[in-house]
Length: 303
Image 1 (cartoon, rainbow, N blue to C red):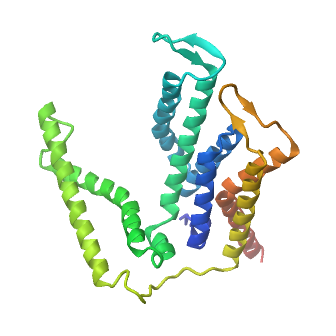
Image 2 (cartoon, helix red, strand yellow):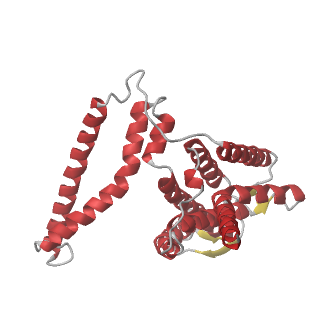
Image 3 (cartoon, one colour):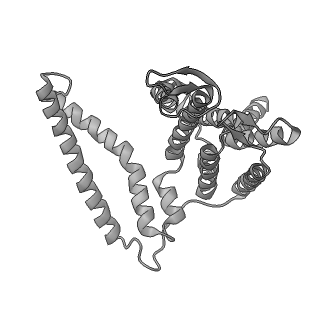
């Protein structure tokens, strides 16, 4: 029997996890350099595969592909900026090369952000978020924690209600259009009622436990050890270096009116390599942990 080892980066301190996702999401949303966009997407997909298995990558790509195509088509259809005119649309507006390239870049950025957020929800659990911000902003941290937990629980509850309705002959996939709409509305109504009741029960439970009162303490298993210190120092180094590179126009790229970058030099390549190391930090930590584990196992077997 094969025992699946937990993700190494997920076992780090919540502050390390939150800082990492804050950095990668911030840089992904603001860096428009094509190399940076590809690096972010590859890092997000690699970590997503590490968390959920390689089989989920194909399923995620099926969901992201329509979003990518839509984002790539929408921009040249509504944005007509750019100096390189390829053709004219039936409306008379020009179709430019720059608008097409920017649409592709925006699609890659959107896919990267969605994939990073998927990894964020898997790593930054509600208890980690409450641990970080429970004392500073108790009400807001509770609301955000409930919101992050709401989506997967809502989907699971909807699937259960649909199965129950299907067993009594009220399947949303059978019958006339009116019957299917009526069944779908019934399912949504049941799940919405469950969600409201669950939110009220959770709020009453937290109030009874004294959540948010002055002086209230909370037990936590999180400890800031040597590994967390090293990871935090590395993230701070990468973040500071990348910000310095951005200030020095090492990530400069423009799409309009013509496509133009900051050129290739030793500094720009080094900044991109540091950004690559940042995006691959969880994967590298897992690979290092796997290597240490194999060395321990091989050493034990040889002994």
